[in-house]
Image (cartoon, rainbow over all chains, first blue to last red; front, side, top):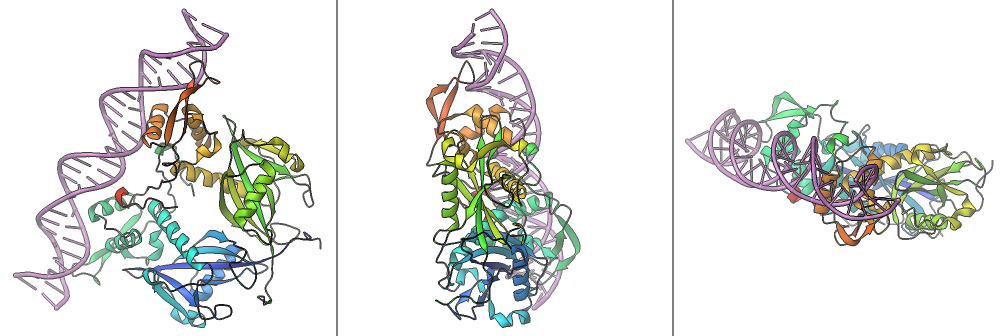
Length: 237
Length: 237
DNA sequence: GCAAAAGTGTTACAATTACACCCATGG
DNA sequence: CCATGGGTGTAATTGTAACACTTTTGC
């Protein structure tokens, strides 16, 4: 078979940034690296791209290996390529961001990998350029979440408005007026109220909501706003 | 030297999507491929990642090779990885998007590559998955431009408000009210008026403006707006 | 009965949209 | 003098932000 001669081939790794939310704080799922170099140091969960799979498939495979989860929010974020980012040999690193419901995470699956959830505020030192990757992912998550309803992905199917508000307040490290928050959210029609309450965090109990799936998919709008809203294409990213 | 054994190494290519604007229409700079397979078919300008360079450096190098330009808007967009996207052998393709001032493009440089500007409306068939790449880039450009002032990158240093408006109208295929457009733009303080007119398109002449560089860098805002603007971090992407 | 969290409305202000006429000038 | 494109203001509407009290109930 003909090849492109005289070009250098390199390893391609996929690294997954896996976010979770415990009701209070954002967390990141890390693994303790089982092989040299940097053995036993903490790192993102990753693996090498295999000959017959795409990057998306590789990321899906890796995420499933570690968490047991499929069909979760998983998005290619950026490709890192400093020639010496891995000291062993050149590895180009494609980073994916995953948002998972932390409750669904299956602990037994990961024991092979010595996985652990870390509070975002208390991350250990990470190998290679993984800290830079995490920082970029956090910025990206804030960016997206400020524009699109994606934080739902961190919650179970049924969730309450106070839970959702805590999610936004945590990510942006701020307090939000709950009346305004609720009004905007409900006016988007993205939620369906369920006739059932969560009594675990208060005596009164908070109503559960679920996503209105038909509406939760079609969102795109604007901001420096040179384009009138009427003219904005419905799906932009 | 130790290596990661038993893993497959692949070629990494960088492909550049180069947008320009001629005052009327958006254009894409394509090259006629000089080697097999698909020799003489049109394709994005690309090249292989070299051993000592990063992807950003490779994209910069490739862009300079083709256009003679440096210090232009250039942004990593997405990495494509279908196992058979290149029929010769496996190549992972990292796509960059560039916005250039079409006037600055130096024709003599590209003649080695048989480069040509195509109207976005009249693109030829492209090799491999390059059409998919272009489609994604166009969506991405619309998305970004709807939120951030980046289309300036397609204009010369001095430009008029009607030129700028044509840029937005062209990208979104719509008409914008020029009073509202102007007011929003000027109220952002991003522009500086110059005491000089462009008389090339009208008898009255339109004032030139330039970017206010200090303000043109710090922009980030919102849209589904669960976060009050006061609380929005200044730089989100 | 009270502490703790959930729920709910109104008003002021800001941003966005819709809309039409005068201006400057080269020919 | 007139055709062409450039420039400008206002009013109605909509969206956003600030603000505090009542409800529920487990203890």
